[in-house]
Length: 367
Image (cartoon, rainbow, N blue to C red; front, top):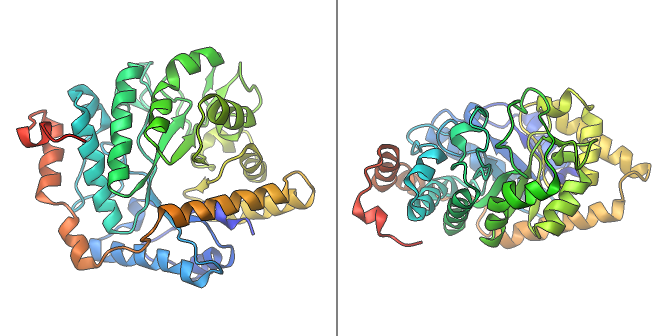
């Protein structure tokens, strides 16, 4: 059963019967939520509850990763009455790590109230190419030490709020011009450049005990000329785990993005992502992709392309990780969640970061 490796999107504002059946039957590991899944806070609270309750119909009742991609700024999946947060660029410009810590702590508290336990954030990408509109204001800045300092603070804020964070897009998406949603970016830098520059914020996040790391869909032609980082054993096993000493869970970016689908089949993507060592295979939008992925992984295991014992051990590791790190999987009561949502302090903090006028009460709080 290879469903625990899959985190998938759902199509609407409620779970369909087919989605419920597929998640339970295949013991799917997680669900990722988007703006299309949100109508109002009552509906959204019920949806989050219904998704997480599916674990009770699975054999070992392991919690699901209930995840979202919530960075602030352009990537704000949940609108008002959730607090609407400014971009990371604002935090980078203010250069106050306390604000960066509070930013993620307050955002995390709102997410956690609704049962969301994973946020695919923050971006640790260094904006080394000012023409890079794909990352742009999603980055904290252009200096690696500056970005590292604030990424570390943001990670610690999520930890404080009991939300698992996933730093991205390893080993760094800040120098690209092509949008990996559309096609495959290619970089010709060598490993020394990555170690001395791009990976600095990631390594700082790892020291801050970030739990997950998302791989980028970028082909580094001088390091692995065949596979982008998200499908590369060289990047996951050598660069991430050996050189950078990351010990958490490895997540792919969305495996249906143009960067991959224009160059590989759904089946090859699923098998190679699994073979290279990813713990979370992310499928955001296409309902049939998780079905084909599981079939492809089963077929590759039967042929000996994938090692069944190794995959069983990896799934066991994920299950233990969940039980250790998701102690209270369900949303808090709707009445209590309403009190957390869009609190006056959170909105005041967001407005202060947005305007640059920081009240002393935020500036002096230490993380």
